[in-house]
Image 1 (tube, one colour):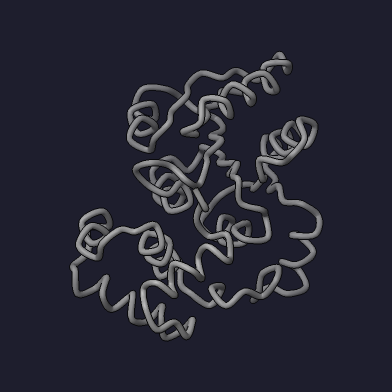
Image 2: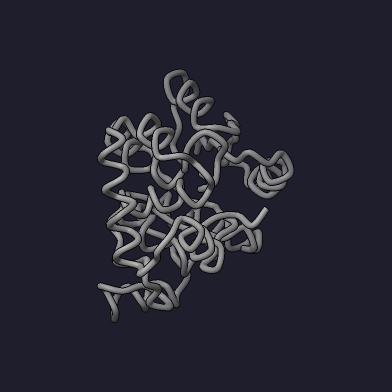
Length: 211
């Protein structure tokens, strides 16, 4: 199985390589630290499984999944993120990911996840699967931001990271007015009155990094 790892932290990539290369049939054929680097790899190499972080310097891995699956439907995607499963797992699966693991997962669980995905399944922790089955319209913790659309959620995270509306518009190939409308809807849905409150909400709910 040919695996590519996309994560902007060298220590994470090295750690994953040590875990995965102990399995004789798992080959790490490429590494990337940005979506831009990953794009070049996708054009040049045949990848069976992509281990993808959410927080990358140039674009959210979560937002990239849907586009990736449209262009390369045979590539399996395992999100490997610092964010706990309860925060992003449902949205990741809805975007097309084949599994979700937090970076606190043990080596054995990482291998188990890869094996299940290799067999054509989806991998989530049991408590997340239970939540998806019995509460299909809500996620763990029933956080207010779960009512946001995927695009609204994406804009929320970009705003919370300090991006200006014009910057977000350029990165998403949308108009400034469209992004401004998204911002207004987000604040209305979450009952937030300012950008400062929006940022605080994102930090308090672990939707962006605190560093």
